[in-house]
Structure formats: C-alpha cells, structure tokens
Image (cartoon, rainbow, N blue to C red; front, side, top):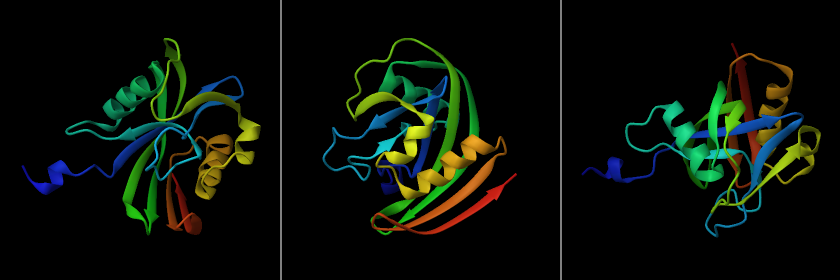
Length: 160
C-alpha cells in the first residue's frame, strides 16, 4: 500500500445543520491533539477512501450527531492553508432537514447556537467570512484562507 493511501486525506466536509434561527455546532473539547481544540465548528470530517463529498458528509454527520440528513446543499469550497498542517480542501454544506435524535459525540459537545451569537464564540477568524456568505447569499463560493498559527493573514473570495 502506498504512503498516500495510508495518510489522512486533506479533503473534508463541514456541515451546519440549521433549525429555526440556530446552527448545530460542536465545541471541540474532547481531543487533546486537535487543531480545532476549544473552538466551535460545524460537524464533518475527512474523506475515507473512494468516498464522494456527499457520502463523506452523510457518514460524518451520522457518526458525530446520530442524525440522518434528508435535505442539504453544497454552499462552497474552502481552502485552508496553515503553517502548522497540510492544506485542507473543505466542502461546506448547510442542511435544513434531518431525522433522528442527537446523541453523544466523541469529539466535542453538540449545541444549538443562535446564528446571531456565533460571532461571539471562539471560532476561526475565517469562519466569520463564510458565515456572512451563508447568511447573505445563496451563491456558490470558493474561499481561500491562509493562516500563520491562529492568525488569518489572507482571504480571497470568489462567488458564482
């Protein structure tokens, strides 16, 4: 087996499940070696071998929340460049319909957060950019974010 097959994929999904005026978010507090430690993020994760973005999305949402998505939309692609890890290409989704009940998550605490309160949480600075895009436009977007440590040093947006 090649080294590329054994290494962790740099392709990921992230989903913000919406209900009324809230997002389902995860407070990443359970893993010690976690680039997102103590931050609030959506649910999602790394692609497994031969998965499509949608297959990864559905698997990750179910594994982390216990929910099965019934309606979702690909909103954009986010390129994260950081001096502490490999570049990550993230497929960003929102979801508006699901079935099941939220269960325990081994990566963090799940909580419904009012959309207006998201900006007051410890989130990545670049996340604020895509939250504004999610709130103000239905256009598909490509967002490039470059970090040095935890500091956002560059952002570029293209909408389609």
